[in-house]
Image (cartoon, rainbow, N blue to C red; front, side, top):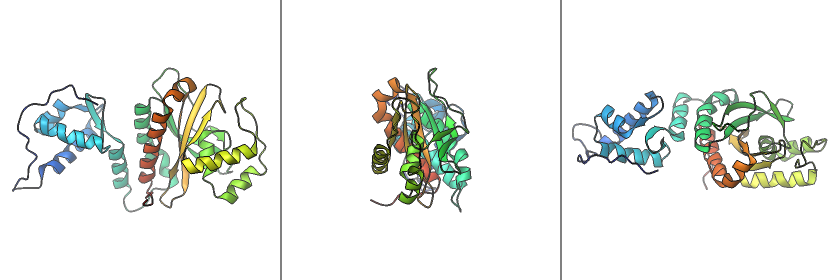
Amino acid sequence: MKMTTSPDTSPDEDTLDASGPPRSPVRSLNILQRLVRSSGGLTLSQLSSALDVPKTSVFSLLKALTQAGYVQTDGTRYELGPEALQLGTLIAARGSAPDASQLPSIAQPFLESLAERSGETVFVLTRTEDAQSVVYVARAESAHPIRFMASIGEKRPLYSSAGGRTVLAFMPDDEQERYLKPLKTIAFTSKTVTDKTRLRAMLKEIRRTGIATTTDDTHIGVSAYGTPVYSANGAVIAALVLAAPTERALPQSERLIALLREYAATLSRAMGYVAPMR
């Protein structure tokens, strides 16, 4: 986004100082520390004043931090971005990868950031013990007065929901078939996919693309997108899901899916997952 504040014309001081370390990396860390302590973000002027650093230097560092995802801005105020949140989580969990029980608390700041950037409600869902459903374990709601809502602890079928299909698609083949073979599907709406042949093809496509989509499948007027969250051992432990009124979701589906992929990747890394090199 473009800044409307004009930086001052003070000379840039991001040079090597013979008496200490390079200034830019230290200043970048100082910016992050200030943002950690702030509530609601800080402006360029506030950061410049707090750090006693010229606006030109602070602006240059903020631009780099924003591009890298460590800072995000609405054009006026700056606050921590998803990469900074992930870094903090990794530092806190250093020495051992987080386990699934820690997922809701680890995911919450990511969800709040994603909900703010997307404008829609987002969730993390995990598989239930009986392997027949997924359950909402964390959420952040849209600020829109008309929005999708679900409570922590609510369950959704694997075959008909975006979160459920995400988890089901990434099950080992034999486990997936043990679920599908005896399954008696129920049509929640006229759009619910109940044919198992069609469902199997859909699951194969979800595994290929990494995105599950529902439109009016469980609730009329609601669309949702789901993508997997990985643990340190590479297993899919949850689904990150974004849900919204269909009339609002469909026109911006590409943007919403791109955000969903971005946050699922950072959340997976926070859970200790290291993606294979391509």
